[in-house]
Length: 251
Image (cartoon, rainbow, N blue to C red; front, side):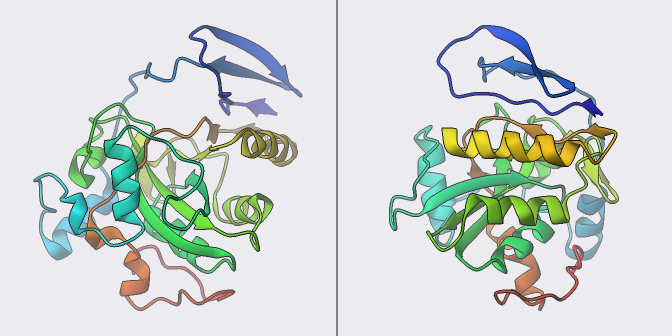
């Protein structure tokens, strides 16, 4: 197995080292501000979205107009915070990226114990990114989903949804969506999440020839525009707990 996943650990150090994880070589880099520039491609989904609805608004997102929990997530982002617990309800937080954030959000909406979800952008250096900017490839972010979950849901449950939905072997994309803004990742908020994500990735990696999904410490999560939140549910797809209907990413 060629392991491409990047595991980044909670640390205040700024040095970079490499270490062995099973049969793969993993980069350890705690200098999270550094971003390697890679080529981008325009989003197929952005083209489709514009053909149907016209160009998305290019102006800045008015975060105060977003509904909960996206507005709370925006407050944290604007303050430069990466919380592990929600401020209003003291719920646990987890962040994942799996290509099209519409479909992954609906998958987590259906999971018992997940009380709130929001889609957004993370792992990029640009402040307050918009959908159009992210899809153009100029911000360094990936589309992501952040969930608030209670004690009836475990991080194992969240990882089960991720690995059942995401092809961890695909570099920079899922399905027809291609570009580094669609790279897949698991972004732990706590040491416990990091350890479990690393162990699970090692097991899943044994089943495939290579792993392209990154595992990095959670960074600031910028919620997306309101029209993206719970997009597939708004389009009529079933968001009830334990629903088994096929998720259609394009509504």
